[in-house]
Amino acid sequence: MDAEFWLERWREGRTHFHQSRITPLLQKYWPTLDVPKGGKVLVPLCGKSLDMVWLAAQGHQVLGAELSQLAVEQFFTENELRPVKHDSAYGTHYVAGNIEIVCGDIFKMDAQVLSHCVGVYDRAALVALPDAMRANYVRHVYGQLSPSYRGLLITLDYPQEEMAGPPFSVVDSEVQAIFSGVSPAVIIDRRDILDKEPKFQSAGVSRLDTVVYRLGVQA
Image (cartoon, rainbow, N blue to C red; front, side, top):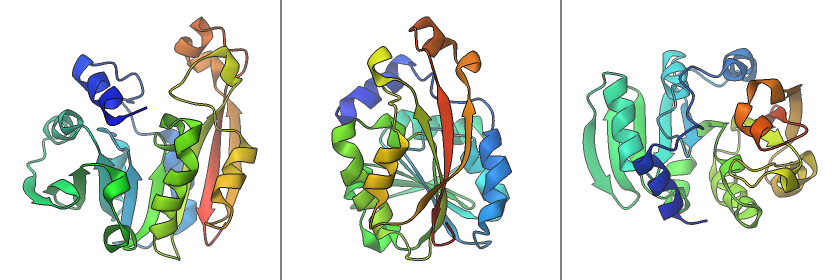
């Protein structure tokens, strides 16, 4: 799965993964992490998520990473924000208040950027990647965050053979394997959401759980 796959999704408006509300699980569990006010929080593969607006309202510096220029520009337009832009080796940076989104490949970000992040919120990144990419993603991104980082990871768990991703099923045994040596990953919530997901129902998926992990030093 390459960058063009996601760029095409945004061009064609096939963005069912975008939520028109703030994620309730973020609102419920983020305050339990005690991420420092003013600390930088990474939101990988952020799209135009409203969750970034909520995180910024909690007093954090938000750093999003997104491939699609269309998604980035829609985020600022729809939230009535006027970003200042500049380019770097990582891509084009859009900055408005305490929200910065880098339009570029997150795999090109390095410790110079990621090590300043004391928090991370991953709702749509890990589940968007095929299994062959997930371990490398965790090593590259999570392995370069601040050693004291804290975060939330939200995954999906369903019989993968019943529907082709993305979003992909990422079972707990895989989460534990790919985060081993990087940071603890502790399940703090698991719930059945099949009745809320018509796409999965129409595909014939028999079971669908969303799973929330607490990541980092406090886990």
